[in-house]
Length: 322
Image (cartoon, rainbow, N blue to C red; front, side, top):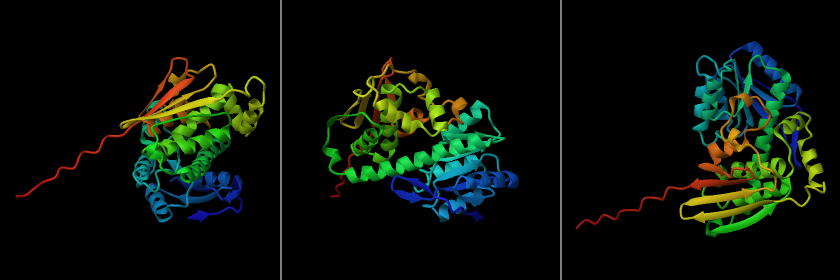
């Protein structure tokens, strides 16, 4: 059952309605979520259980940008739906916002390990819902643009052994991420992780925007505006994030160094359930858990080396019959 709004969400020069699949077995909750999201201009499709959701997803694979998914449902629960989505190469890129009454850290951790990085705890507040959904939508928009940029860069990247570069602005960081992703054996896997690390180096490292400051700026929709402002300040305008890519046999390394004071990186390598409903703060964990095999920080926290390893293919064995 679908209901559509006429509003559109724009990104760059392209206008696109943001399509969200909302899944909940409670009719009241389903109606409430639909109404709130439609008022913000999102195009909504509703599903009353996990099985209905999977039917919608499989019949319209290219249609949905974000999934708002109830955890506890009959027929097929949210965790089962998540597993099926992540096992499907056509669907696994869609961010899942898990809504649940199960707010215990271990239960949220279970969802995070399954691939859910956005959480809403019932009863759901309007402001929190819109903030988390907005973050998921921005992730989709950024990934879409970065991937298009990445594909434009594609050439004989497999020949590159060592590459050095730098970036200063968010636009430069995103462009450099798209370029560097092609140097890795799995560019799609590496792309988001590289982008998160470079943007982190610009905003938190060089420009000194703290976690709490970004939370406020994101709530006020002024994050990018503040980044642009700080880039022009005398104390920041000459700071750069430097990058070194190196390939050694079957291991790929990306070292990223900013000119900031560093940060407590140990708190962000794994996703903290207490930050599950925040509108940011999952980038490093995603890079560590999904994009790369591991991240290695220096003690100060202003330099990180991302590592991706590729298992060598087993040599073919020729069999001779005589």
